[in-house]
Length: 344
Image 1 (cartoon, rainbow, N blue to C red):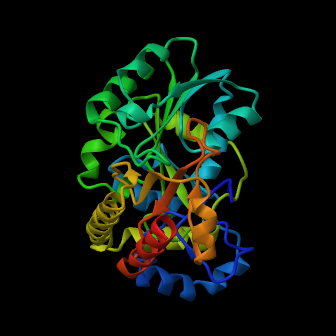
Image 2: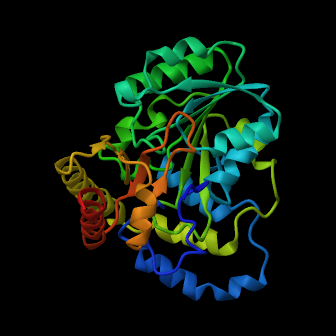
Image 3: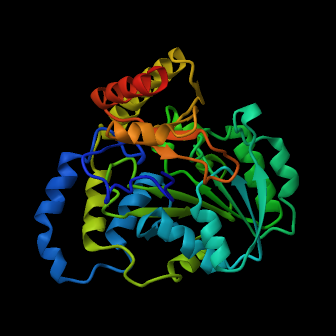
């Protein structure tokens, strides 16, 4: 069962969804409460400039609000960034999130691929630097990368940022899963941000609210932020999304608990998979990529469990699967089902 993205459960009943990478702790209670209390907002247009939310994000990111753009999820911002700058040639990695390619294709951009190899754990290494030449207008990278969960090293990220700055390449760094990373500040592009840098972030995964659709971009240059803000639809972020984002940023210990819980459960799944002889990649995110027998997704679906079959990721083949890290009870159910499917 090949899906374009995870979380497509609408035609499947009574399934445990491991295909969508959402925080296992669920939506913070305070966010749910604010949403319930905001029903009257439905009668008003939302603030098109997200002023209150951007001011809150400015405090969180320690950057001026003018450098921040909010959007209808990170996916919305990917398309708005591409349409704002209309690159003629761009670099992306493979495997990686498919929406970069879709957005670039939509504007007729020539795409150059940097292939990541299983032999070196799908790491982004120094070979990419030679491709960041003056022929490029834009570069998309994802850290931790989706679907591999691999981080770009701080040293490599800095070198990439400097090369993009030198050659005037818009460097879009997708950090939507960075919130799950232990010592995340060390691995963020924020340490190497330049005037051509755009960092993508989202509330979707970390605060478990994909139905709300809320993401934001942190730009090294306010003029670039304004350019992105002027691209796309005027009312891009609903009143509910803005309220939810503000409430989420006010939660104090939620993120640290999510990081700790996810790390423990991720280690549990990795240990169990390797005990079964499954080739699973080390990950810094709230999901894991592993390689196993073809058709495993259908066997698990018969067990009431949905996983992400990854053969439609460029650079991956049949037999690669991505699974989310969920609660311990749910993860244990997945492991038990995998043992039945693989060992009979």
